[in-house]
Length: 178
Image (tube, rainbow, N blue to C red):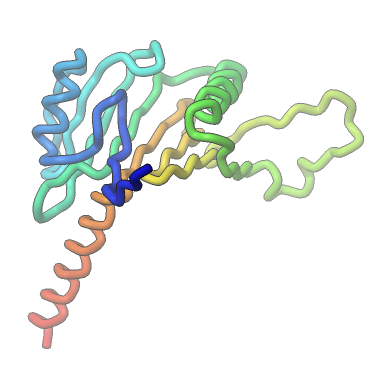
């Protein structure tokens, strides 16, 4: 039996979140996503079907080397009941793929909403509620936004590159100030 110390990249739609931002976006366009213009330098916007819904996909690259490290999927807007159902459905799907996630619900920050003795009381999701799934290769966060759900994929290896680039940039700025 052999062990590999080679780390894997997080997959988005079966494509590793790795390489130059344009290369990663090109791989997604091969899968049917349509590229749009972006006003931001290190971001590419795509549109296409994800989880059987028409979505907007924002792909982010590091500032210096433009290495893809983050993908944010914006699912289409929904009414509250539908949003609740979709959030729970995605949680079940992602739990099957990535294991039990860590969740935070905003409703418990407001004591007036704690009605323990109410029969049939169901948790109502709110903006900011999320479930985060941690894997060896990255983090996936399913979050309730204002009227829609976003899913964020962050590749651990390339996020480290982003952090190093930021530290180098901060050191450079500090040295210029001195």
